[in-house]
Amino acid sequence: MNTANGFICLYRQITQWEWYQNPNTFRLFVHCLLMANFTDGRFEGKEVKRGQFVTSLPSLAKQTSLSIQQVRTALAHLISTGELTDNSTPHYRIITVVKYNEYQQDNRQNNRQSTDNQQTSNRQSTGNQQQYKKNNNLDVVDSTNNILSLSSEEIAESIQRDHDIEDAALNAGLMMSPSAMMKARDLADRYGMNQLLAAINAAVDVPKWSYVEGILRNNKNDERESEREAEEYRKDHQEMMKQVLINRGEWDEEYQCSRDKAKAYREKGFSPEEAADDMERERKRREKIFNDFSRKQAANGRRVSTG
Image 1 (tube, rainbow, N blue to C red):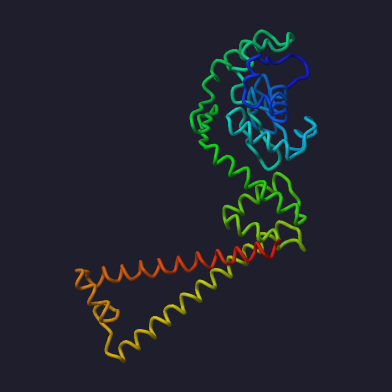
Image 2 (tube, rainbow, N blue to C red):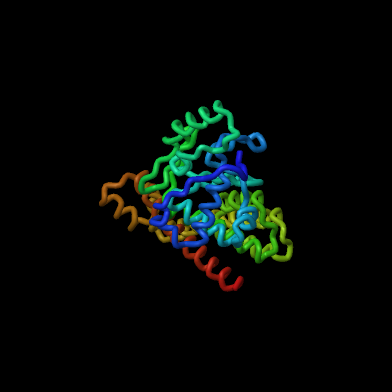
């Protein structure tokens, strides 16, 4: 449990720390040291361990006199270099000071704590010294031995994704809350980030997340319908071309393609089945090139139309 009493340790070596000259990042880190629990506790049925505390971006901003954007940036710095981890839930987030036991190993806590509590805390401190591991990637091992392995680039991408979602949502007048962000992340995973941002922009007249999801569902249904129609057209076109070749006497029945193509397959030693597989691979390759080009054109059109 956090308390206004007691103290924290702040070593002089911190002046050599890479974020020492960054006032916002340094301020937030010291604030997290001050707010972190010095004993294990619970919050709404969830365990909050020593070195952790429950908070939110608005709370951090208010307590540190920073803007929410400044808090986000400072958090990103501290997460990228392994000082903090941030576990968000729909209603709050739990910040963990990864090396809390190292930073506060000489903390005698509060004189009013009982001897039993002090001994328990010391045992926890010793056991939790192995609670973290850091190499080129950020590897955090929690008390249940779950491992979160994220590179700095992946962390930055995740943070940037949240920023893009929130910026688009606020511009469209959508409510932004922890639960809304969780919903938006799920939609991005299901439908793709570009599709989500386009749907958010389209929801400016009806700024509701249910409306955004409805747009995404309808777009997906339209896409499936288009794919079905395209497949039917392809089959019709294929049958028409086959009939043209049959009428010209240029159709090879065994290889189910033109005689010239069948001859080339025979010379390569392809069986009819191998030839069919090769033709299908080539068809899918061409289809992918066309679809990628179409999506790029559509994305460029959206960017122009949304300013």
